[in-house]
Figure 1: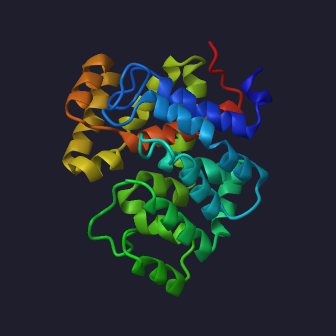
Figure 2: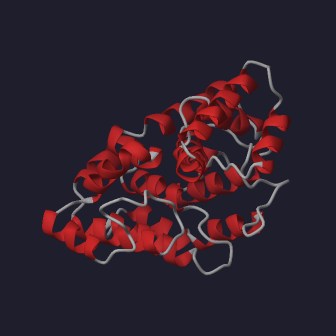
Length: 273
């Protein structure tokens, strides 16, 4: 079966699986490296458990916010914590809209109920956010503010975009996801293309997950290290070992990588080579 023969659900699950299995993917869980609390099996379990929500998205039925909440709920039954929240934010609109253009149109049609559902999904995770954020997911008043201001999902993403690159993708037309898919097709088939694409995206701009956990300076340093790998000044193995030792996890780029693989598979990129 070629990637073009897969359903969109199969492509989404394949993208989630391929991303976590790619090695070496500096700083992240992969087939040769677990975190103390989150293992490869947790990511693979979420890939399977997400299927009902992914099928909802593929049908283009219901509310995007509710589907995101269903995906988080259904994958929240293991002890590995949040594995794919950011990926769901990207994949579900892409599947719902059957591509980037359709995703942007579908997001524009979301309502405050979608934003509320997103916040309820967010509250199920341990995703980091700014401690001073007015719309704190742990503050019940945030839902009241969303309803009073009639904020839809795009409004919420715009609120977060300056400090969250996944949110930024949703309001700017998925540019890094698009670039990642194009890179895969340019690099060629096979799993090592995922590693090269991941490092190239990591070298593009500071990973906001790193910035939230360690500060912007560390995120910028990590970006420069990725550039050194591309320039041949640092081996990917040494880069990986350094990030693991320092507990630095480029989680936002990992989420974008999943969406990029999903897009590339839908355009004929071959993973099985």
